[in-house]
Image (tube, rainbow, N blue to C red; front, side, top):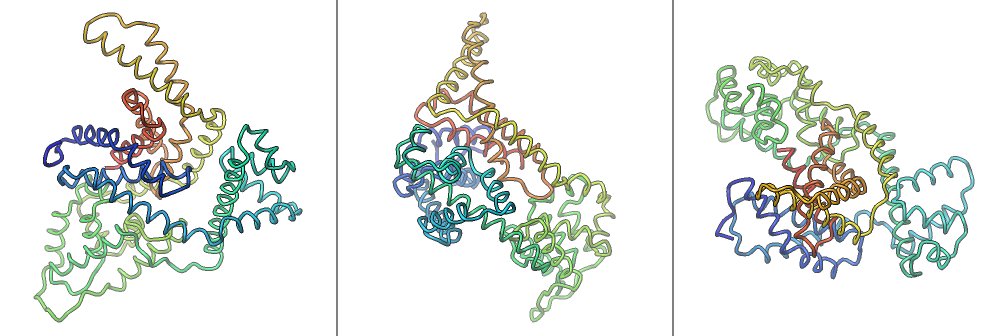
Length: 453
């Protein structure tokens, strides 16, 4: 590795892949030693390398890669424990006790339906443990005998399932209360949302405008950039928007004593954005919420500017605002399909991935030498591919859902995730010391991130 990261995207991706291959096992062991929760270790490890992607793009030196990864791992672990403290209001044993009482003592039809609903949301193995223990009366030892697990493992799985169910129930209850008790707009912003407000203020002051109007919010959206692409594609660039504002509104005389408060119309827009976030179950206002609110305020200068620059707002809104119902249909359909293809164990996934890589290598060898490839190796690799990929669609769906926000098409996310898992299956042959799912998780995130740029 040189003194800085290469500029070319393909070289960057190859370097990221190399960093992942070299350091994954060590980082995973480091996290596992400090987080005694097997179900989250791979996720935390993946987060470390996802943060490394952003670091790569800042063109920093690579001489301290290992040290930086461990520092990032420590930060990620600290964030994990902080999140645990926020979410878990009871010790694990108390969650287990309260969950047992809730399951065993409630007999009305509504409660049974809700318990069934919670069970349906749990992973299959966790669901089976709870059904055997609390609905079929099995002892811990009998559950272990039924599932082929040690008694200690059953207890851990049982507590994990109860904790998982408790967290789901708490989240659903909070969302229900939120929708029932208030229609007040959210006033908390994501980091990107707050960045738009800060940039809007800077833009206003650059014109010596001692107020922040809808036109300045538009400049903030274009400058921040995360949701500006559909506007820019239609000609509403930042430089052109500044020129139009200068032409229409003009520039004032500087006044160092003046501030830059939001105009009443801008305040209305921000409240509208907060209500959109509330209705969509979000905890903070995102750039997407601000942009939608700006566009819907039809009398604002921002909308007049956009139309003056030839932006078709009606067409953009109908294109960008993917109905939530359609995304939910896609998710339900995938969940039904995933139930038909149970997850394979780690060794079987590794074996199939190796066969896929061997088949592709044989095809490349034959192409270079202009020979006929060994049909048995190619056929074996193809069969392994179509056996492995369907059993990993739960991973595809889980990662895609992390990137699903209002206005984004779930199908596009799934397509990108499937490209990532296909790439993982084809290139896994050299990653023999890494679990296939961990490597696939890394590639899926990379592919989705690239698709959103």
